[in-house]
Length: 315
Image 1 (cartoon, rainbow, N blue to C red):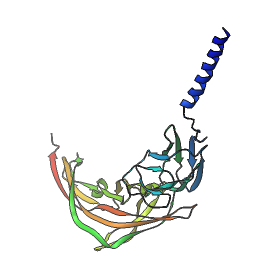
Image 2 (cartoon, rainbow, N blue to C red):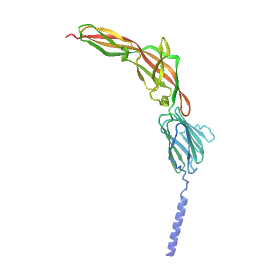
Image 3 (cartoon, rainbow, N blue to C red):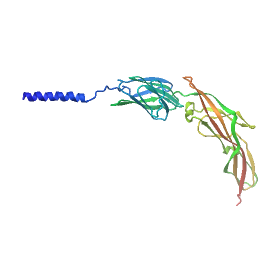
Image 4 (tube, rainbow, N blue to C red):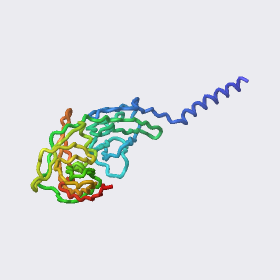
């Protein structure tokens, strides 16, 4: 009986021993950080890992962005791969509106350096560190930077595209009813039924997010005596197409016969214009300066033609 108990204990000890050696003991490298927020005006943060026994770093973006990968000797890795890094090196992420760098500078450290997030919303990505046995995901958010302020805007007044009387728009339905037995005068403003169509197009669609001032207006050029000049006219600085009221207050008078309903058809002729613009802006905190270039598109009503149709109101 004693011999049986002795053999049982030995087998249990040996089983424990071989069981332990059958497993691979790996230090848990995972960082205590699972989420990280950085300032979009410019910021630096270092993620500390518990151990150095991890190899791969991969970045998963929620927003398309360009990037370049460099090895430990700062040589560009030209192979076609995703935003991943094996060992030491850095991933440099750049765009028109955002730039930041993720760098493994120490076996236990990853450094994130934010240049700027000029987008109007937070930029988010996931940093994943892994070895053969485990992995960790750390969510990183870069908050929006402070908005830029406009310094000035210039236009190309000597080089532009101009097509006078480019198109015609027709509107029908304006009418006047003369129920009297005498001639009556009807006065109306032909231009008030039409709009000046205008749009600021940026070479970089997101560039208008730089500005945070609501209701910002700028001076816009217009044709005068055959030249493109600044005439003091202003318009909102927005990327959407605008329908501005016409500044032309010209009036038309017509004599309506007795007992007659007269319906008018208005034919408005538009001039077409495109010219380049450059917007200069600066950051109130970092003092960084930027330029936003694009095209100003304008369709301005310039002259009209009127026809009418009469209907007798006699019983």
